[in-house]
Image 1 (cartoon, rainbow, N blue to C red):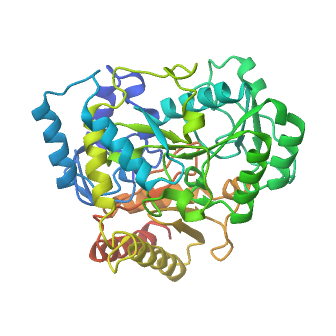
Image 2: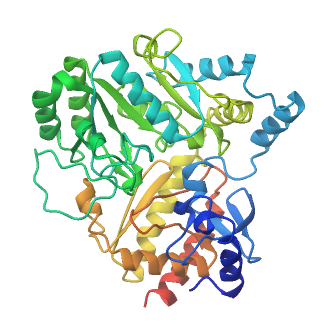
Length: 444
């Protein structure tokens, strides 16, 4: 499946005015050779500019956990319009949302708002450096924390021979980043406690923060091993290092207490975004009171913005958290875990029936498809994930889109997929029938 004449012509037109023809390069789907242009979304479906309807298993990079055009979120946005789209001012609503987050998220004692995930991780690292008076950070191979100079390293490194217990060279992933930034970044393999121990022993006196995705959804959904997560928590606590959970993607996938509640491991700081407001722009830095006090005006870490805590995101988040807190939302007969089981088991059955070698690995409302890997062996590290069959993934995505099911893929990254609370059992069964047809015809 190619872009098609109409889609190609629209993309070529856009290239005259948009840099690269797109507002964000990650919106290009390499399986199509360009972006899928969307006119609107509703519930679990996208309506394309090509006139076709797609069951959506991308969900705006994970932002629309309640589905598109959710009525409660829509009412919240309409309330912002009624209030006059007030920007750059403090209202009663920011504190209400902060209090709600503090009720739900274990590490949250105080909150500061930002707009994007990159802005949130940038602020959190500056916060940790201020709180500890140290400069280095430790991140993990295959973990993505945004595109600013402090973290744009080793999120999508090449395949290498795994050497447990060793730190890895930080590989920059963007032009324009001065080499001096790499001197402040350590990189460890995911789920490798010995490497973290080594980093703490060698660099502990200058290690400001350890930052991680507690569920590495950006590499397809690789969960932390519980003993690893507990071990990192103990090491950072003993060393006075700030432990940061980047829950931009993992937040609210497994419950309203997020991944930290799921694992019962509480970081010092966490970052929330995407699903917290069901697609409205907002991100959250939340953490222990003593650490958060390092933010200005009580501390020396500068962090402010005209759109920090903008009411579109704030009121949409209040509505979203109310919806996610409804009884049965996660554990009910039609809740997230029931739909996840139906979808993931169904995908495994389809792939097995059609002779497609693929590991389906999901936790909560988001999952990975590791084509070419053993269906029965869990993927536990980035290097295992990096050995997936990228060509077969793209063939699958093209075939699925041709059959009305939207998945997204990337050139560099494996990517991640998901569903929303708007996806019913009937929607899942329809999608599985379409995917079965895609495998039967498109993957022969």
